[in-house]
Image (cartoon, rainbow, N blue to C red; front, top):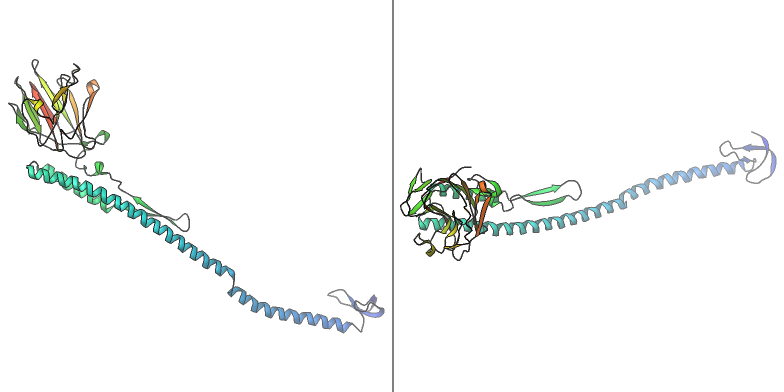
Length: 347
């Protein structure tokens, strides 16, 4: 298209100039080919750039720093996982050591109790079955002592060692007994040895001494560990000259009169006396029980004490036991005169 415009290259205004439809610039006849060459050169440069871009793209992708970042992340993650794993191993080793010490002590207590009962020939089928259940329960605790918990909420994942059975001996090894309030184990005992004229009836659960001379009666079981509970019912009381002592003695001391020569005796009399190491103390003239009352008797070997309760009058007595005078194992002891006393082995 011819028009009167200024050439973009020589800036001379002449006739017959041409205007480029792409860049909208005007050129004379002389410089029109130059513009054409310029456009071709741009095209060649573009083709060269495409070629270089293709090569550069390949090299860039192959050498991209993101790969390095991923590699570094991998190294850091593995390092953190190893640190967490080492800490978990140390925690587990510490817990295993504590558990081994605990179960070793626990097994020794049970083993000593079994051997002592064997030597003294003071055991029954009930005791044997109880010991078997205790050992089986301990074995079950050991096998299920720990578990691994891995959290998937974060990465690297958090690992945690859980201690499933944290020394729950009192709840587990006494599973053969009915559990009662305050975590005491309901115990099965009977009257056994007698010093005096008392008689035993109903599978040795009822002791009767209607006479005016007192009788000593010990229980069948021995106690060295744990917390044990049973009930005593005052079935009958003679109106005159009656008395009743409830407490414990050590297994190794024979029953004898007078009772104050027995240094291992601890307990209470119905008339209001406490007995500490065979001596009557703290007379308070307070009648602790009467006919038809049901008493709660607790032997707490773990805390070295006995507890006697009468819920009817909201009375209880705790006696701390000096093991120098009354060493383990303990036995239940009652001294009755003009009494019928029953052991209740169910709740």
